[in-house]
Amino acid sequence: MELTDMFGLNDQVAVVTGGASGIGAATAELLASAGASVVIGDIDGDGAQRTAEKIAAEGRRAVALRTDTTKRADVDALVGRAVSEYGRLDIMANVAGVGHAQPVRDITEEDFDRLMAINLKGVLFGCQAALEVMIPQKSGSILNVASTVIDSPYPNQGLYGMTKAGVTFMSQVLAAEAGPHGIRVNVLAPGATPTNFASFRYPGGKIDPEREKAVQDSMRQMTPLQFIGDAGDQAAMILFLVSPASRWVSGNIFRVNGGQSRPW
Image (cartoon, rainbow, N blue to C red; front, side, top):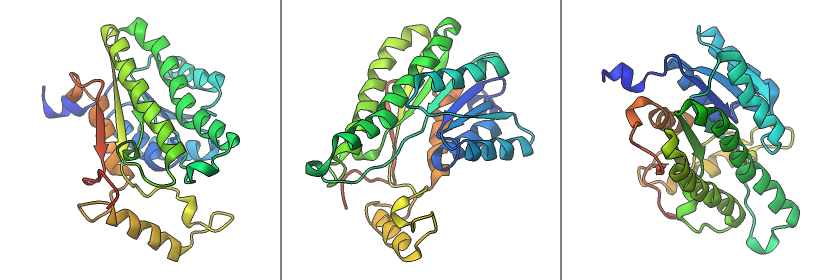
């Protein structure tokens, strides 16, 4: 294949959850720049629409739909929008998720239910909805986002890590199940990546510069390369994993983390 063919997504259709900001927005924009028509879902419907409008302003095709990924009907509707708008589904990027930092002894049932619903159940629903379209096509690529935390027992990350470990194992099983149908499934496990960190924001969303610097300094120290990657670094790996360049890649975990494998 020519280089442009290996990474090009012309005539392909992608759904991206969590596309209002961060890794999801960067992914939607990059897949669109590679030629895909993109359907963007996020519980922040206005943010998803802004991402779609930015893509459209660059001459690419994108639509947005407010989507609560904890609701199967919403995820089904998002995939349905891709089919009704563009006629097929080639790529499903389940990016939507939330962080959580709390000692195991303090985790409440409410915390557990919320994290499981967003980080694990939402990914399951995305995979199931995608399979309904991809199996009859006998082709497709599913990309699920986990976290580097699956490799390291960080304090206060018990619940978050539990959900991301679940995403990873489910994805590997699904790769074995979906492979005979021509469908690839892979996992992105990002390292510390600055997005919308509530931990350095004042109530109401304004950034606390001192807290932001402290958080980013801590992230930098955990990374052997000694600099912090960004959402675009994660999106670049996602592009590879859903492109023809990775046609023989499935059931694998890809860590984009600057070499981070344990607390530094």
